Length: 99
Image (cartoon, rainbow, N blue to C red):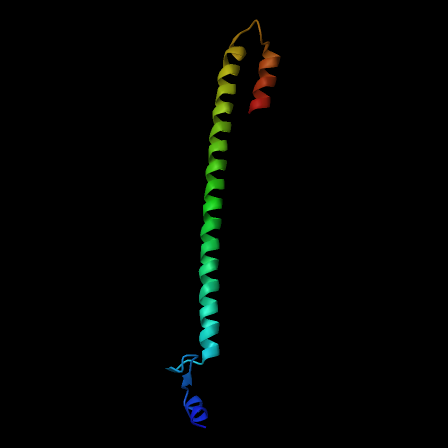
């Protein structure tokens, strides 16, 4: 009967018979939610690390592709200037392909 009166007043006893303001079931749910949130934050951190690594990799590949493109253009330039190798028609075609 005393417990019912306390419960109506918003007071509860926990498993150690300590007087609490928060209902033990709500306290348990709060603890579980807190743990789930911590796990979620950890997973988000892992995801950010993975995505960060992927972005770095894509940036590196883009730089390498750009460097190879520049090398190709450097090799092509002497060929376009040499009249014995490239006729005006073939130089025009080469420019059209790489433009």
